[in-house]
Image: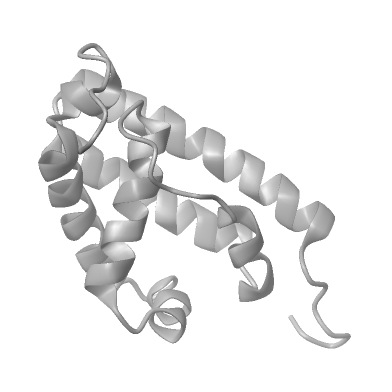
Length: 137
């Protein structure tokens, strides 16, 4: 049984897991078609339904819903060769999907959360990510 969540949490205002999953399904459908970031995702993810469930667990934690995601998100991104252009493309798609599928206030909160997570992830990749081999651009 799932522990009750704060009725005023972003998670509850989003509409809980069903609305979160709806957002994620639309967002990742766009990601899989994006020329800049699709290759990164398609090379890593074999089971999209399982990935969406895991990402929903992550966003549940972030938005004040049930804590289901156990961690390790930043480290999983270190070896992927993510560059600033990839972050910008991801955030652009996220912003668009949040605006299209969520009420304005919740879309703005989800966007701020993603921007903060992106900033932390960029910093961690810069500090701890795997360096590119010489000559790799």
